[in-house]
Image 1 (cartoon, protein in one colour):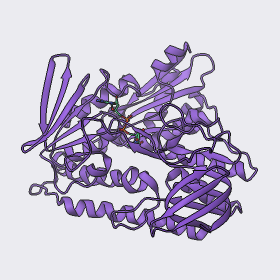
Image 2 (cartoon, rainbow, N blue to C red):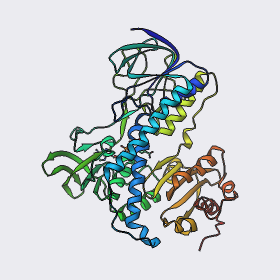
Image 3 (spheres, rainbow, N blue to C red):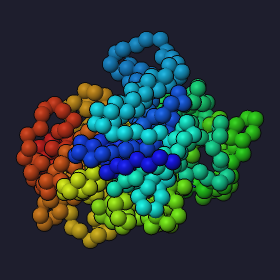
Length: 473
Ligand code: NAI
């Protein structure tokens, strides 16, 4: 095969890979990016899981379903009435697909503008920093990179007794149902289960979520998880904890899901079953023999603190390496590595990566939870403020939730911020920025926040840390 020479060859055009490729090209490096994915139209689609079947399409459906839900449940409070709302699922999905196409096409345009050469096909790293690409047209090409950045992403974990198909789906299938399933089963009450479970629940599905762990949202702050569980229950999401799913069977009347809980053996029958029990690094067939790149037990590429694999010129970023499987974590690592290759300082602060779950209310946090601080033996102060006392939130008919600020007992430095409520996906960045600048709770409390705005909950929570809250009854 003919061989082409590049300064940087990126494998994977998802969040981590396209950030790496564009930044490298901007820094004057001759850059190629290889991606194998095809869009729904069968044409190459850049952007990875996030753009094609993750972050962006799920947010489109969350927004559509939220409008529908509000019409049936919230509009009446505003004095607005109309005939029963109807949902055209085909139209909703088509809108989602158009948004996806706009953004995947946007990456292709950015590649062009920045002179990143795109190759469409399956790439495998060979020894000596050679990337062999089997292109969709059947031809092969070899790319030799002075640097190679592996950004292969992740795949859904499949349970051996619940093979994906027409009725049992992962996130990809659950973004494309052709009608609202009457009964939707979900295995795993994690981020995907809660977000996509919410979408179909709002549109009328009877949703049952089976979670293996005994605690709901174990990674989140306990009080946040408690408020979220209460709100989801009110919305009709049936979340069952401590369930061990043992088998599934697709029959005429639906998917039978067998599980055991503390009461013994149980069975539910659903029309569709969404399995979302986590993802694993997509490193199968990525590395030929003899590259020297190491995988850990879970198939993740081993890297150091700066995403270097230990093999000269070979780096790895995003979901296929340690750390949270979040698009924005991948963005930062992609930029970091491109800048390091160009001889600039590159760094990711893993302590200030925000977490967001786009349910209603939204859930977000940054930094340590109270549970983690206790486990680490760090003395801290906490201040909370409820959205029910924030005029703007009540005016928006979204009074659920609160903001909690955690600060070091001695230095007052902010160690974590935990939020549940309206638009907290945006508000969490007050915590991110404060922590990034080593801010204290008192710093945040002395910053003037606009009234009326949701951000007042952050301000008042920070004031509550020093026990000088104004709006406390
Ligand atoms: P997850 O790790 O968030 O949740 C998986 C859930 O399944 C956990 O609660 C786990 O205890 C449970 N579980 C595991 N095995 C089980 C079993 N056999 N039976 C019952 N329950 C079981 O993973 P999820 O939701 O699949 O998402 C995958 C990745 O995608 C995550 O890393 C997440 O961060 C990312 N993602 C992020 C989003 C966001 O940031 N808003 C949105 C969607 C996904």
